[in-house]
Image (cartoon, rainbow, N blue to C red):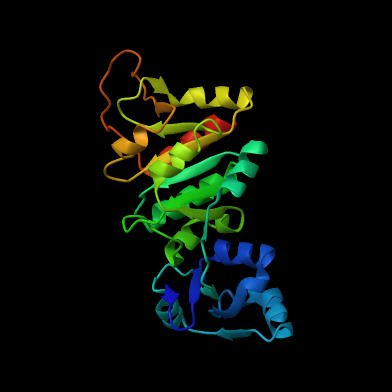
Length: 256
């Protein structure tokens, strides 16, 4: 939940707050916790006291109001609302030069999916996520922070005005790979780009419609995640995976 008056974002969930404490404790302005988890945050309370921060024990009901969710796991840290910076060519040129892979969201609207993908990206060492400024696109929220389980501390997020124009600008700098149920190549081909030393830009599409047609037309490759019996021409019972599940498979294939 975002506190617009104070420009704050509530970060909740045990793992998310612990990773925040370990890597960016300076971001925390206020900390609230239940009696049950209080012993786990003694060190953070000392840091806050030293920097004149606020910490307090609260009942679970108060934490639910602060975070806007019952899934707070007994702790809520208030941070200054993250500012997502616009991506520019200097940054992408540096990524291309150092052969760092990128993940591009094409209107992923569910905050939980956003967080789960960030978690997977952090796990597989993919540090850069790009999102469009679009009303259908989710942004950094309390839910996405919690579901990321600390992954937000290891992944940087930038925005672009248009996914299609961004992909067009990345032509020749990255291998632009999208996913499609009509694709002829399966996702195992992603590992070949690593062998060739080429950085990859993976496009992940909207939960209902996938990547848009204009985005597909700006991809160098379209891939599909194969299912058992695909090569024998058997029909799949479920025609697609949740985008967060699919991202984990794609990231594994890319980095294995």
